[in-house]
Image (tube, rainbow, N blue to C red):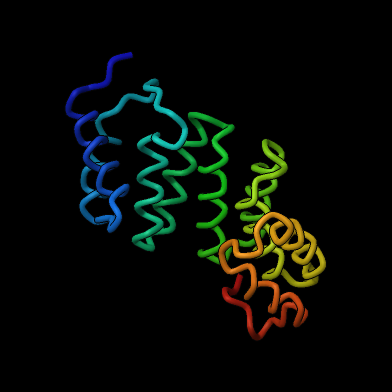
Length: 174
């Protein structure tokens, strides 16, 4: 299907702005919001180039987590196998303190690809924030550490888990 030229141009400009070495998320937001308003639901984009997915990234970087959640859900609605959108959704649930929702989404991502390091890392983080789930957090983080000890804040998360996931030190609260 041919893309609406105005939608396509806004999409292209927004995408270019977030791919720069120094992304301009505010300006990208303007372009991608226009693109999302103009595209039709049946238009197909590659998984990580879907305008809803890209707008989710933009909202995430602007700390607009609820809006990011909505956009990631739209990207997933179009493509249920979009692991990047699933992990993005899980990450935003984490930042909103919705740990059980994050666990559910990360597990969906792992059903698609059991090796996805971002989903294992997010799951470790979510478990570490839920009472009596520290052992599960340790198990997920062990998978991450086997793959890449420098992934994200794995070292800090390891120290937190080693301390027994103390409630007073949680990074977020539900």
